[in-house]
Length: 252
Ligand code: ADP
Image (cartoon, rainbow, N blue to C red; front, side, top):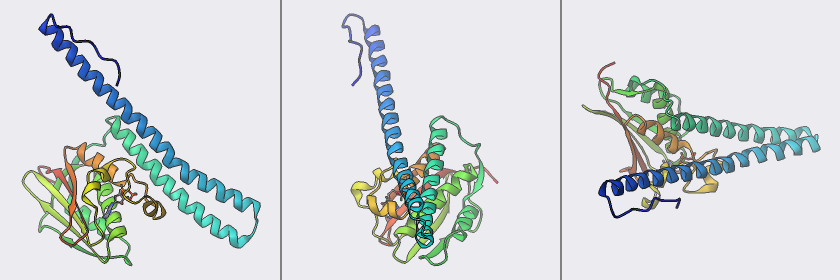
């Protein structure tokens, strides 16, 4: 813990002032710690794809065998893609931390969900889409809604056994998105932490499948910045249920 002002016992006003300043100092220390941890974690995460690309490229240079080169190049492409996703994610978080948000506008969550489902690969689990009969206007940037949908669907696809369900629920004050899968779910002790930056339940699995540990942190960041909420519980389908609520927008 950093330095704190002593609390003199003479004057109530000065005491109150000193303790208010101490509270501010404590908040500043926490923010500094968080930033330090984030920078360290980010560097650590960037290291592994960069090291892998470097080693693969060195192998290819040392052994000019066309068959091996193809294999090596495929691995380099895979790791470069992971690196791009990671860097894009870090940039989005940095902008958001700096308070730079794209302008909010009414976004139709129902249309966005339908479009995101159309982007899903066809050979994966089956997807059921439950949409309201009318549009579901929420207040956000279109890119944020897309980020949330793509990340939650990608995770659901990665973890589902056979089935994913996407539901859009309009309300008076909020528009909600629910993504269910029938996978192994997330144990209760991990549920809060999966929204932390770089947190993974199973490290190796997430890495080899191209995960960055930033997907859900980005989801939580862009939603909370707009006054919305995110959460994960157990799905009635057996796996994980991710829920997101945005503020409803007045109209389209
Ligand atoms: P990653 O890119 O590594 O998947 P995320 O932030 O998207 O990172 O997810 C964090 C962790 O939460 C993952 O490592 C994974 O273990 C767990 N997780 C996310 N979605 C699901 C899901 N639908 N079912 C089970 N576990 C999940």
